[in-house]
Image (cartoon, rainbow, N blue to C red; front, side, top):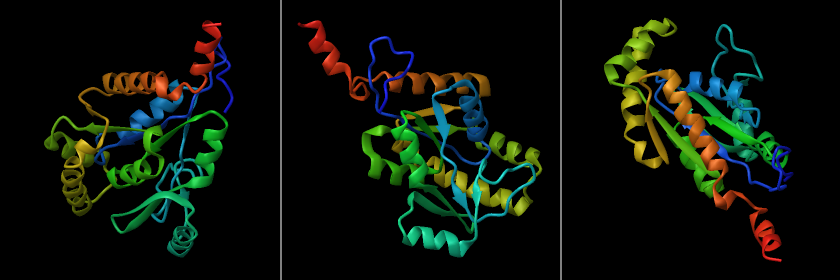
Length: 215
């Protein structure tokens, strides 16, 4: 992995696999977009999904949209780092693009649920940093889902039921934040990412630098 061009000491650094999870409507996707816009060293992992493309979405940017048979074949061929079945649809993170980003010295952002976060952590261990974003209350979450105007009342009820289940897995994350204010929550998430990059365990060139100091 190449040293960061702005590092005057030529340190090498292992990439961070940065996971954002939250119940639908808690602000995860908004914060992910802000993070990508603010940080030049971060790339998004684009998942595959079998769900229908929504207005305004772009294939290959928001998701790779595919059919169920193709998705199942990819699972059989072990092409996913993680995958899950959510609301009768399938979502999965492809291995090859993530490996390519890490080899190029980039950090990778994942917008995945608790199941995906758990699978990714089991596979990649200490390179994974997991952040869970909570809504201020379930009432406010319901209002946000309703105000989006994209789902029927039945779908919103299913999302709320799933939200309660997802929140119960908060203790499987390294950091837990409440999204009272999207700007403040974003600042906290970005601070976590920058701090995790500086962890001693990620500075693979640090030992050589220390030895040079002691000569």
